[in-house]
Image 1: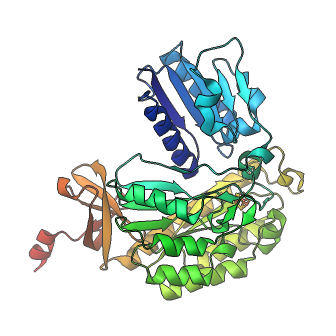
Image 2: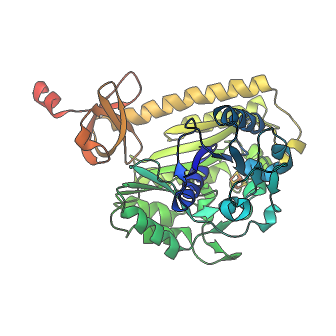
Image 3: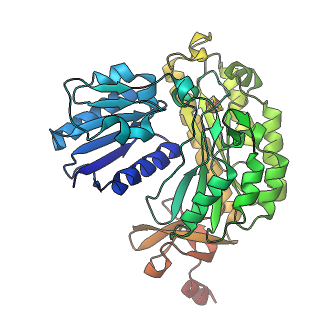
Length: 439
Ligand code: SF4
């Protein structure tokens, strides 16, 4: 039985795809093993957004060859699509497959026999038009279910459309089938995943369905406790969706909405499809209907043309906004993007300073959000995340809680009252005996 190991860089989408590809191998009789267990084959799923993608890729290949010198190494994923030739020249690489080919490893690479030269099969990205269904089964608690791929937006800084192609989706009927399959396992939470999930519904080049209808349909699937909408563009997060989530028992009150900049000047330069006023309006709509909702924000600092004044616009905008945490990205130049042509390059030192300021702001926001929810009762889905006699899990509104370890609670939901924020920054729950002591 041949042994195969996987390594994934990047986002939830890559994780869901690696997981599905690993099941393809298991179905064909391969044994899935950990990276260090002398695999015969390594599959490395790369990301184009990762800093130093080339260095990371080289490093992983080098490690793989140290572990199993005679192994077969195949590189797939976004970086493989962008730089197939360069990757094929890395010592130890046997195959590079692009976006349209990565789900056809067995068909294209046969019995994974090594050849003199690395095999490169990476079509033009315009040929990546079909949708490959995928979902991750890595832990018992949560799965990333891919519902959409690619993007038609073309933001100035982004390489994803070059690496993943045009927007395309699964059908609602097929997503429902996957959700039912997942429901038959013990998984309790499904995170809807895609590049631009609000754009869900383009099938074979035509818009045929709507994201809102997918949400309505999934809400009816029995056997799954929670659905989380991972990240959705503000211009696609409609009132219809927000209002539905506010009434739903299964879609949780947690939204992750990319902002990227709080300055309209920069948003225009980035080619984003909204201005800050729309963003503000989305946040206020969510908070009016769901005051306890968690709102995460993606933001980029140091985009070309971001002067000190424009950065302050972003800082002040975020400071005033009722949001719960930030994911801060430091802008870095990417080949073949429009942003590299834009004047006003921000020195790296400044980019790093701005990033630090926003990371501190994020911590303040998270703490404030947690504090606002102390004393309230939520449902926690406990995970196999145990440390120092405590177990951890997330509430529906994405507060990370710590509670006394109880093996019965792993992968179970339980109602808890939030007590206080501990030193690690997690929220301790009011344990029953503590209630007793306090009385
Ligand atoms: S919406 Fe913009 S940032 Fe997001 S994937 Fe599409 S092009 Fe990239």
